[in-house]
Length: 440
Ligand code: NAD
Image 1 (cartoon, rainbow, N blue to C red):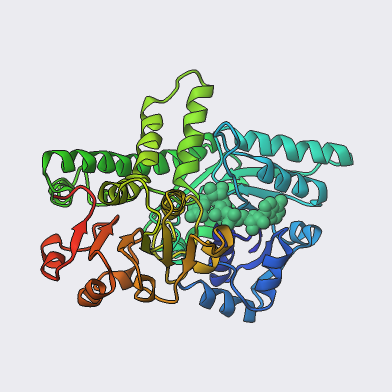
Image 2 (cartoon, rainbow, N blue to C red; image 1 turned 180 degrees about the vertical axis):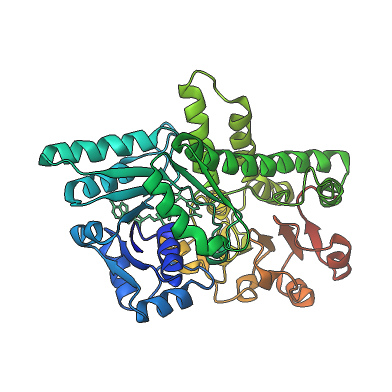
């Protein structure tokens, strides 16, 4: 099939690459000329395990192409995916300007039947707005062309995006047009060959499903984060509690980790956007408001632990910080807790020596090195001259570090762990003071 993907970011590039892997001829469009140039030069603008290989293979086979030429992109695919960003607007609602601009550019240039598929995360009712934008552009041209609207929310996880796209838990298709449903079924059939996992529903329910999923996951995290604070007060161990409840199949083990707060490009903005939709419909969500508030507070928990130990004035103190990305296996720094933590520590006069295995170039772009912040060449190099170590992201390479070397390097022999990576008893036998989340 001929497919166009509008927006070549985390979702668009993975979608395009994986669809080409199944033999489709995919053209990826982005307005960011430097991103497209990087791809045309054989580079990959983001860090995503396994992606480079899939892209390279399909580019050489001629099945995957990149362009900034809107007309070429619109004329290419019968299926037009919109995978552009939907950042939060000032009032928390999803800003649809990129989605609607993409829809208009399709309406402005299309010359035959198109299935316009919204893959961006968008509020309920956006399908109607996309439809209206295309109709309006066609009317301006004085032409009548047939097209169908489809919602196909994306559930991939950054850091495992290729794997998630290649074998999805489910594919949600919101469409009423029979041709669109038929084409989308055919497009996704190779990805769900051995088990039917396609759910076809109306457009609004599909749009809602994506927000409901992310809001549920964020709720679990905030629930555990709030309980972790209570656990510290009453002397319980949240890790044991997590195992205790996770073994119940009604609860399950996923997304029950207390930590330094959730971040990334999705949960924060999607919780906000769903809360906005609720408020706009006259039923403000007490639950979602609390989920967000708990998370904002949780991003301060590591800072509070530093302040508890050293006081509010941190001038003359140096902290090593491990992990900058909002989670492991990605270079995404959007809404990363590390950004809040670094800002808060620096505001109190501290110096930070940060290290992340892949996110440092992106981190340096959003937080340039300064008097207060420098980026270290390795995990151990970050410890040199530091008073204490603060761990923010649970990269694998931090899982079994050389505790002796850490003790030798740190002036105060203190590890503050925002991800509960270590056995408290074990690490203390190495002569390290250990403070973590929700554990005695
Ligand atoms: P991103 O910022 O990485 O990529 C968006 C791309 O769209 C950018 O490269 C931008 O230049 C391009 N763009 C904007 N307007 C354009 C236009 N009119 N024509 C062509 N290109 C245009 O964003 P992302 O993380 O890939 O997210 C995209 C959407 O998918 C969002 O709605 C997001 O909520 C959703 N989503 C993201 C994830 C994730 O893990 N990142 C997962 C599921 C869903």
